[in-house]
Length: 557
Image 1 (cartoon, rainbow, N blue to C red):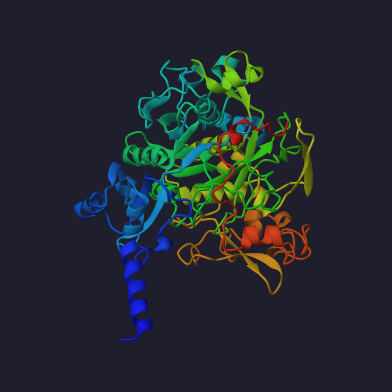
Image 2 (cartoon, rainbow, N blue to C red):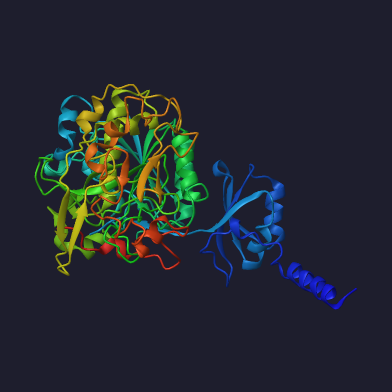
């Protein structure tokens, strides 16, 4: 045996003994802790069984909880154990139990809610699950006929913490979706004033939570959906995107809820002003808002008027396409700036932090996509009250098809603190299919196929040959003869998204003649923005900007 041959065998043996030989990096999230034990979510190909549990224990894993409905478990594992497990053929993906936070950056008449209520649709009997920081009692949540609370169930998923909203985020969110404005004589009423609320507290007193606490809440909603008629779920929270939605445990959870018959509405995020990657805020959609099934909602400024015509996009509203997968998001926009909503009883962190925002001692004015999402949740409850047979895909399709598509080409907003001026362009990645119009949605009569995934958001693809970005039928399971967005269907692309968002003609959403042009974000010479959005790596890295900063920003005023 030659010396080189001996050397090669020794190297291979060392690699195998050190664990490097077996490590499958494609199964490991890029932000896993490599220096100490941490809580991770392990996803399996098959249903959880004792063999899998024994495997996790054999490498020193400490069980925290399991999520059978998404074939996952949460364990505390060392870095070496994670590497060992990555080689197991039954393991799909391992990711950290990441931190999630609210999307609060600091009404109703503009989206047609009063007109729908006057027609007799208040969401009565429909359950809206609010996965958030809890809901505090308020007269705005009572049924005036019975005096009973419409909060029909309250459950907590944060250890040693109750279900009331001591942070002050979940209550205003719930009140936008279903508060009746009783304490203000109806002035600050929400959308579906007769709907029931299911309070699923997944965030701690500081407004933060984790993937696992949110997934536990989603899991519970699925389990009890029939008993409490949970047909809608609101998630005004999220975090950065680190991998494809097909591997992200949060996305897998919301997809399971959607499949069970629950309309899932998610806030887009508040990073529309973020230019750290040279994208002018594009490519900043959060998780799980990046999932193609859910309804992702951006924020509009209602300009403190009851008419829709003068409303403008909030410059902080996150813009698509989604990182990694390039899903066309958001799906809709709704009022989300300077929204006055119920605080509920008790002491709240946000009320103490922003006493100048308190109105009549019982309401608080806040901004962010957190407040935009529940407008859509309330609208979905109204639609389901009118037509209980609607599937989540049918609700989404009707909302997008009926959305108002009248926008200016541009608008500007000035930060009141820094004086920075932000310019927003009204394209498909900023306003989606348009501005929520509840009255039009509830009267939408076009037939929509009742097929799971039929209204999944499409994919945007860059074509270097034409220097343009196109919407494509990227998923064969979603697109097909019965797909909602099919070009030959009544929901053709121009009908759903409107001609104003196709900046380079009817077929391309971006191109060399678009406003950003070939030398800006999307073109071949726009190196920073181009690589950040269309490159192989996601917009956000391990130093993502989510967290407390998104809660306290000044927003558009």
